[in-house]
Length: 466
Image (cartoon, rainbow, N blue to C red; front, side, top):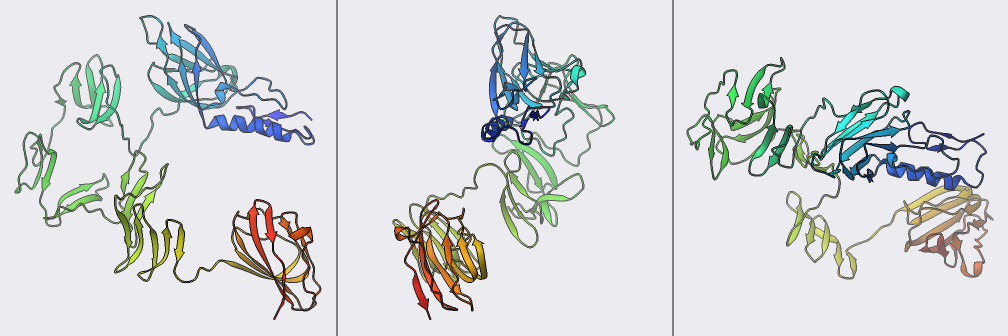
């Protein structure tokens, strides 16, 4: 039976009994496709081309062959010089895929820059203007296939822009350290319009003007946006060139309280203090996606890193982790890392290794019933105490770690004469294998050392402990 292929990306599904001896090659081809699914590429459009094709998969992929296409990448930056808008057809029209598209084309003349228009069939298209990006998906509906904007009417909990807007922006949200939140637009009547849920204007900025028109009433106890606040203000917003935005208040519990739309407190400044206090379970979130979180849940306190990269704690001298009245750990810059028990150092790094104060105990696996094939878990244990209830073969493990050492204790059951056979990863002097004591309840000890992966060297058996 011939191979079949996934509809969207052409991943080959080998039929039962097919491609004997070639599964590895075909699987590698499939992995190359999967690798592109999470990757980026740049696609150069032919100079001044009005049309182009972005192939997701071959119409008829070849069995056991590499069928890689640019359209298998999820993030695609179009480059090249254009003298008109370019329509890019996603093929085949049955592929159900999504893309992050970046239009980085240039103007080959003087009338551009130009847009990239994405199409798949006779259905809707999406236009990505020059210098912009879009997240789109194709419905793969055949000749009537359509392209959709995946983030149209996008609902966001928090949006944190990180760059300035520009004079040519039609509708943009930006941020700079000096200006803070920036709204920029351009229209024939207004550059910026803020509406309510009834689609009625609330605030407008006329085209090309700097005046703000507030359609309805502004109701506030105090608004002092053109000067400083003072200690006696109950609830005041002010401004100075040095301090920027100023919020001043006074209350019996908090001087300032910030609430959400459910009238629940988000944070507050307790009366007469310079503290910023958050209620239980309210998180301080740092990073565009709330990557780093600090909070207290009424029982415990948390520092949680949910983002990419590592959580790094830095100091130019020393970092101490403290308990209620004792030291738990210290980290000295260019010095020792020390772990404490009951305020005493038990483990400390040095310039040549580690110093342990007290006893270092490795995990031991004690198994009272062993017969037939036995696989030792070196990842979980250092030492092994095995009672033989039958002849045992130590089969090749997969968890050994280079440099690991320990002992294997072999105990004969009440019958005795149980034998030990070894997988090829276990090596003995002269390849002579292991001969155990045969007496009932005899105890033998075999030392081991992991020289390399698949190379566990066994020492001489220490027999008949009593």
